[in-house]
Image (cartoon, rainbow, N blue to C red; front, side, top):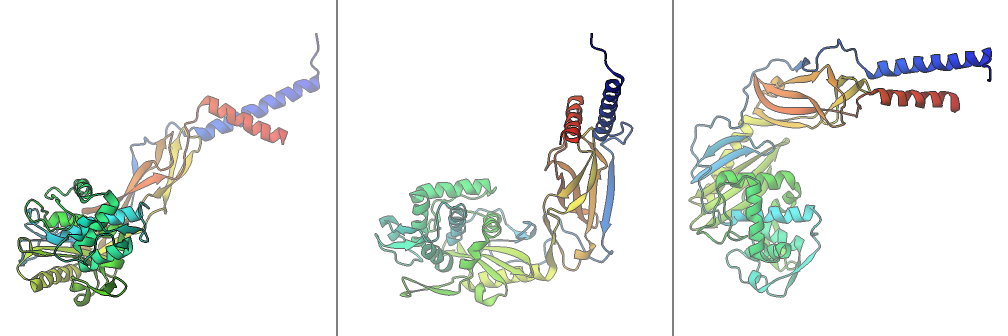
Amino acid sequence: MEVISLKQKCRLFFIFFLIVTILTGTVSSCVTDVNAIDETDVSITTISADELGGESTDTKAEAPEFHVEAKSAILIEAETGTVLYAFNEHESLPIASITKIMTMLLVMEALDSGKIKTSDITTVSAHASQMGGSQVYLKEGETFTVEELLKAVAVHSANDASVALAEMIAGTEDAFVSMMNNKAAELGMKNTKFLDCTGLTDEGHYSSAYDVALMSRELLIKHPRIIHYTTIWHDTFRDGKFDLDNTNKLIKRYRGTTGLKTGFTRAAGFCLSASAERDGTKFISVILGAKTNDERFSESARLLDYAFSNWESAKIQKKGLEAGKVKVRKGVISEITVNFAEDAVVVVKKGSREKITETLEIPEIINAPVKAGQAVGVLNIDLDGKRLASIPVVASQDSQRCTFGLAFGMVIQRWTKLFCE
């Protein structure tokens, strides 16, 4: 039987002592003191600007004391969708060429998804060439780019160009109309039914001021490139042989106008979805069923004037910034950084922006395991005690739950690195 020497005994004792020491340190780094506060307790930090005068807004602000000369109307702040004025906004009405907002929305979705390109060529069908009303007189068999046709729709409200684009994207106008109605349902447009992509149909084809505002907002916010087309005042078609003049006279008359679409039939009256932006604040007004062409523009301008005079948007820029640190009970990583997940936009009465308060709510400690991106807290945005928005606060990294097996593995890894490298 081999006798272990004193030197070997000392070496074994040293290694055992080293393993115990490392194991103790590793486990202690994995496990937070069990007497720490419960994860349901939170530490609240309030960041407040100087108290200044002003009023707050809710989802629907108080209506101004004036009446719009139209069958229905609505005014919203574009980024948040906050309703600032509404009159008969859910009444189903014929909307004429306002329909083309949905047509342009689906075209822009196809462009931005890469399904089509502005340089793609489409051939005009017999069906597209037979459209009446406002048109650019397409002929069967002619070819045009998506860019040319989209410009004809956005600027000149061309019905034939609308059908040509619809057929390119969906194969037939009927298939495209099905896409329009599906998108309307997706957006929550509860008082809308499309029968064509142009708005030429009055009977059974309808929407509401509220629904028009929804699709207008979707187009402008999700696909801002459309503004390149909707703000063109004058252009040409067929290599300069045909003039395109914008049917939305606010492009020239109203500062900051970014679009969006006019519409008229005898049944629908004079309609307009108008959008404008000044100093980063964006508004959309919708007028349906005005009696005259001038009235739809003057009433739209009056709504937008009210908006810019009384309201402004404020962007709370936080995305990616560090919100603090949180301890992790029984985590491999005992403390992690938490970050703000996104920015927020709020709409407030003009002059009250500095009165906005930010309240950070994050726990001092949470239980492992923690995944990167996991929500662990919130930043509440308030004004005069009313909640305007909330920004999630998320973990910046993973922290696995520490187990004996994991801790022992870490010990071996450290010991191997210490003695073998």
